[in-house]
Amino acid sequence: MTPKDMALCSVFAVALPLGQMMFKWGAVYNERLSGPFLVRVIQNWPLMGAFAWYGVTALLWFYVLTRVPLSLAYAFSLIGSCLVPLAGWLVFKEQASWTMAAGYLLMVAGLFLVVRPA
Image 1 (spheres, rainbow, N blue to C red):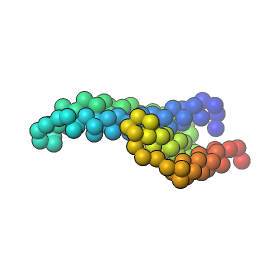
Image 2: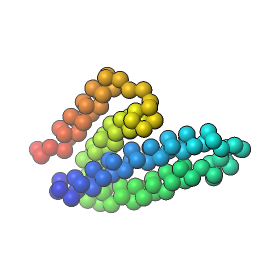
Image 3: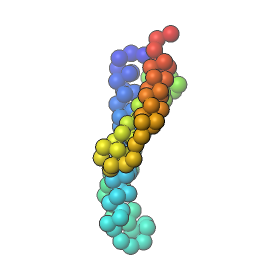
């Protein structure tokens, strides 16, 4: 895996948690809106931003997959899986525990095992 490929995978791994944070922001913003569900969805600009962000990240993912095997590229999504709870704790004051942190550290260790040169 070239440094450029690792950088692309890393950017994608960070882009997904950003999208998840946008969806959470949309969920929080939704509480301020009134009306039927579909009307609230249309009026929910953080949610619309999250949909647009996911469209952009889907294009990035496609580009990554033209360069990197799926089995290696997808391993980087573990980083995103670790960043989402951390961001939820920092930004939205959600609950976190030491056992969660230990589990996520194990996931990151697994990433390093998967992407290390054979």
